[in-house]
Image (cartoon, rainbow, N blue to C red; front, top):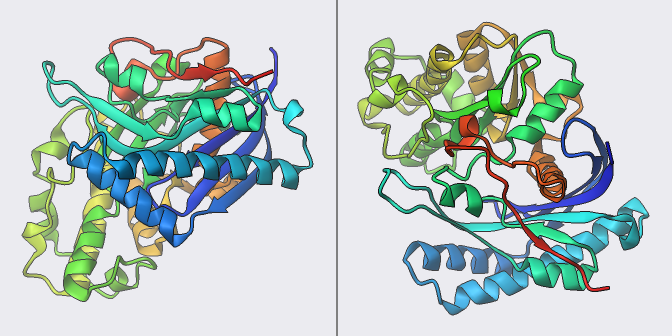
Length: 374
């Protein structure tokens, strides 16, 4: 199988900057990580991206802020590529393709069969190809959404390849623990059509909202507040009756699906403890929707740094729970690595998404190819 050298570029919701990864891969199983780099955004760039997202959310597609943000974002990605190549000691002629995710300013997959979904990642793949003189693949999500899929997650095939390299003894579950808890089930010896992905429910969103309400802080980052409180089992049982928990996948969580209201009379510490326990219990409930119980679990996302949340999930699942970083992965760079992997899949005309991961009715080949000028 031909191994290509690819750069992956992502710009996440944290607005920290352009995340860049360089790897060698065949887009299926072979993956060799070469280098990583982060090009940080300055304050003005963060403000501009927030304004663009606000305009898109309000339906102002032609707003000047969106056009300006797209241009500045593309320029930042050009610089990120130059910096990555410099650090890796490579020339642009050594790179086969760039996977350019862009920055999401709107993601609204359809919620009913007769609805129309939309996903919008700003950034100009054509300009990026012209400026870097490297072929670019962009727009990984649109084709899936147009087919009726959720357009997310697009990283499932990449994570499955990384897991296969670990030579696991059984099925593996991945928990992407951000604001939402996203589950990926990777069966032992299975292929892309056997992957299953869905949202178990909230990740850190309820705890973040609670801590903000009660203390004004942005979240319980180190889990100290939850650890100082006690779990109210009556509130926990009540919240687990929520219809979303029992709903079968495929399913995508919206913050309006589950609220913190049942915990409102609790102290700050007890509420944090109870909502942390609920998040873990919701993840545990997801086992009922899997073909079998995973032999191992891998946790990615910022929630992996919350000891109270990790302890609660470990107790709820009762199995082997690994932080992705402990396996030699760069958990904060997985999306960038995935973008490089997806670009190679696009060049090889392989699907990027599958029915079990995004609800699309069939495997979907996505991405838009931009050839660099000669």
